[in-house]
Length: 336
Image 1 (tube, rainbow, N blue to C red):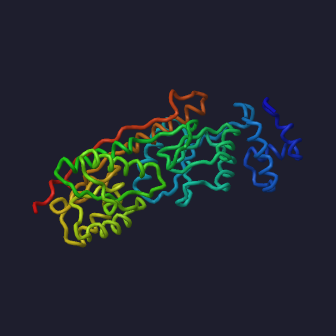
Image 2 (image 1 turned 90 degrees about the horizontal axis):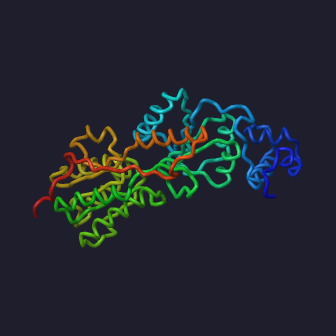
Image 3 (image 1 turned 180 degrees about the vertical axis):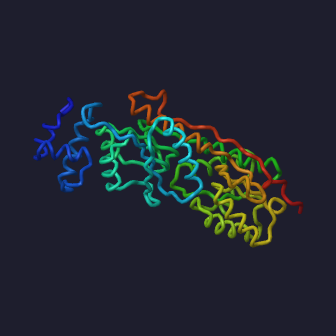
């Protein structure tokens, strides 16, 4: 069938009543799982999309979804979204996927019942079926800092991670460092891979062979910066500088250096990524790549609100620029 199907036609094909299809559309829990799945498949198959104004209006809520909420990084994102929703007279609903980069059906059912104005997903992603569910209910969504490739037709706001990794490593090269380590984030994350690629490109452009032993995988938390930092700093030919995939891992690296009686920056130079507020106050203040988290969150929130109003963005993919912020954690390498 090429034309749009009505709810009655979908109900007839699914072998259920029209009110049951309406319950599925509205995220009601009192529908058998098998029935819900069959109706969802038909809604997706026929490309059903609820017309604006054809049902109860959306709630004055913006759904903000994190894969985890336990870091200062998340607070910068929340601040940016709050800046926008405050002006728009909306409220924010926070959700967390408990560290998973994909969202379960229970979350989806909650969203469908709340009927928010829009959804901003941070690092998390939606599979095709979930995208179809939101689309059929006319609930727009935007992905901020996507963990993977969100797809060409999914609105997304990111940052220039590759350029950031390049700039961080070039800064260390310009200071005279040649043995430069990296504590990256999780490899499955697109932002982490881009930062590693920028690091590699800077070394290769400078004619320096990339040493796999100097690249370690962390998880963007303080503990992995400490753990992987100890491993790197205990190498017989340890690096004189380390670029970490984010500021929290840099703080863990600071702890590892203190434990081994290494001074920053006299014995070890450190560059982070994010420019969280703590980067200015740690001792010594951290040289880092500024990721404009608050601005990214503001843009994602404005984009999803515009979509809810029927305004299509000029482009579906926006990457805001990163900037190297030089402070006191980097210096020329110690003389032999």
